[in-house]
Image (cartoon, rainbow, N blue to C red; front, top):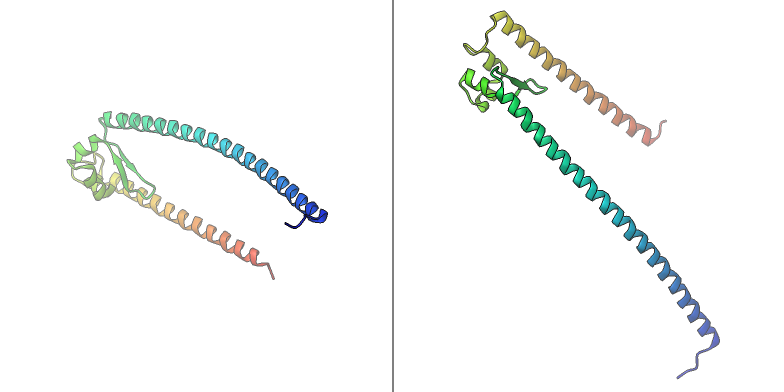
Length: 165
């Protein structure tokens, strides 16, 4: 076996020292990562508990409101932003003799215009239908304007990111 020279021994010693330093840094970084992971895990667990609690509260409120709606003897129809029927109570179903699905398919005009379901006069019904149509047109216009503004912002950002001339 060939004897180890001092220079080789010194190189080996430096390499070993460098290895120990790198190993120490890796251990320290790993420890920091573990701490961060544990903190994030705790935060996620808390967020999940909060989310479950909020969902439970929302479901209780939904049941509460549904019970109120169903206990009313007056017919109640709920419309979405496009003036489509989304919910009605049992009183509406009894007044019209139709199921919720059928009522949704008929729409507001079909339900309110059906014989015997609108206690107001013809002018009142026409006024209501015009108001619903105007509301729908306004919402559609607002939706188009929001889309246009969004598109203008997107194009402006792209233009600025390319650099102005």
